[in-house]
Image (cartoon, rainbow, N blue to C red):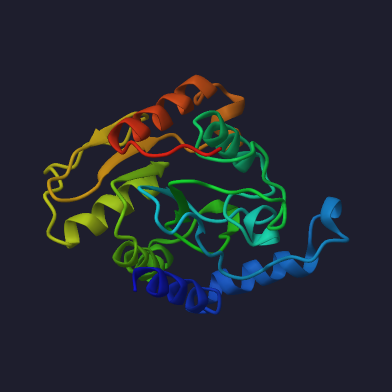
Length: 233
């Protein structure tokens, strides 16, 4: 039943047109394209979650990149943030390969599912508060359908805040005041998933050394400690 509910959410999501500014931007990017991808078709729609519907680890990002997931139609696929993420998941034994180029590349996740706080590519990677709030129901419905989630890894401050906001609204014991975002911050929640915070693997963070591969690896090691399970073959 949960799997069917999850699939239903994804089918509805890809047709969403609730945010006029985001709809206009994602479709403009898909028409104009980037020169390097001129011969490729762009997805240009809300991006569904990707990974294992029976996951114990849920990864929440910010939003699709204009020429990454907005092009490929798969979370964190086709850009350098995705390169970092999937290499780290592969090192942690949670992905069957370290590369993510398109939806047909054979990538498989085991025990991990990747979603985002906002599902359409926003201009300058900055959704408005209203857009964030409008998109919130998709993440809430995914959480309803994902019975096995024990850990949420939030990539970046917006994803972290939105995750805690949703869990608090469900009556779970999110600490007050809420712990300030920082890399490696861990929030334990009675009768709910643990929340781990990580810097986002954006070029701004990885190029400057704000996020290193060791720092990123430590997050996935901790996530696995909190929810032991089978590793990818």
